Amino acid sequence: MTAIAALALLAGCGGGSSTPASSTATAAKVATATATATTTAGANPPASARRTAAAVAPTKVAPAKTHKEEVAPHNERIVLTSPVIPSEGAIPSRYTCDGKDISPPLRWREIPPGTSELMLDVLKTKPVNGQLYFAWAVTGLKPTLPGLNAGKLPAGAIVGTNSAGHRGYHLCQPKGTDEGYVIALFALPHHIAAKPGFNAAALRLTAEHTAKYQALYIVNYERR
Image 1 (tube, rainbow, N blue to C red):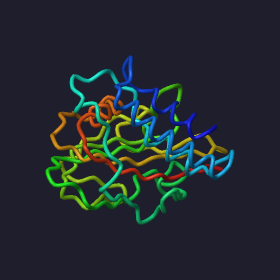
Image 2 (image 1 turned 135 degrees about the horizontal axis):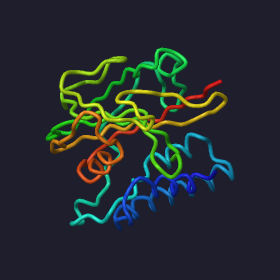
Image 3 (image 1 turned 45 degrees about the vertical axis):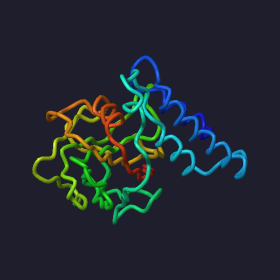
Image 4 (image 1 turned 30 degrees about the vertical axis):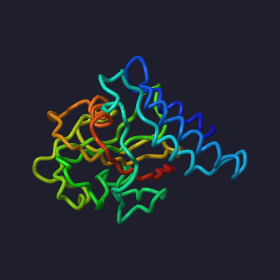
């Protein structure tokens, strides 16, 4: 699958009946940049390029009321890392169903001033049956937090229902498969009302219309 095809798949799932003009423009810019990189690298761009292009594509959404609300978050400023997973590297089995299946430790910095709370998603870079697939969704994180420790959440964190139907973290897939995942951190300027077990896809749409900045971290899970 080409990077542009992956981008189109992710951009066309999980939302309403049409895509806002500005979101379409954002996707088009990413697609153009990816096409240029693909031409330079050859007919088969590296997996990291394909996953990155898919991850940054905005979710398909219903038209917003104003142009300002339609602008997707910028993938800049916030720095997101993990001390146990290199960027575009493999997830250790401890953080999958092959091990303890606990959330990995994460670190972030340069949260923009004026951020009210942070929201975190872990989802596949490719849709499943035309829908975004979430392994984890958490909101209500304080902007002063420097990150998360393995398998732990601070007081006030609100956990949503993932695509496996669990309220919490669960990273698992069929044996013999290789999947890319994106860890996305949204800096929300306003509090988003959410209850435990919230719908991850629905809250992501709200975050895309609300947040000015997000950070993306691409990782890989190869299960043998």
